[in-house]
Image (tube, rainbow, N blue to C red):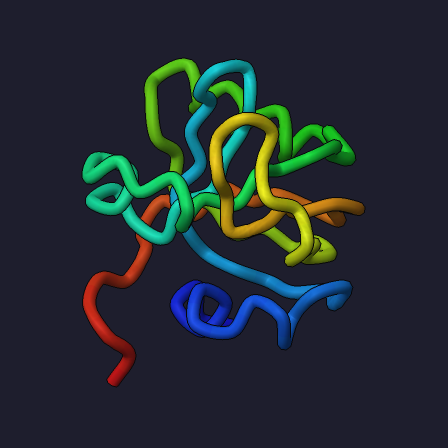
Length: 113
């Protein structure tokens, strides 16, 4: 699904299993998914989704290793919690019951055709 659909109507996806592509970064001991590098760099925390808990299978560990280098492009499959407002920093929501996090070396840029 499009990250921007989630931003536009988070209540529609609350409690649902969703798959979203974006960029994760570890900031203030929290792992957060943003729709793009630019939105992270523009410091728009309300578009960030916190990742709470992870399966940490070997593929997830590879992704986490990329975090030490900054932003990492990923696909996340998890249950979206649209009621979560953030722990100190306002967020769009959280991903809980994470099924998987996969490194995606190339994320298509621009609007879908």
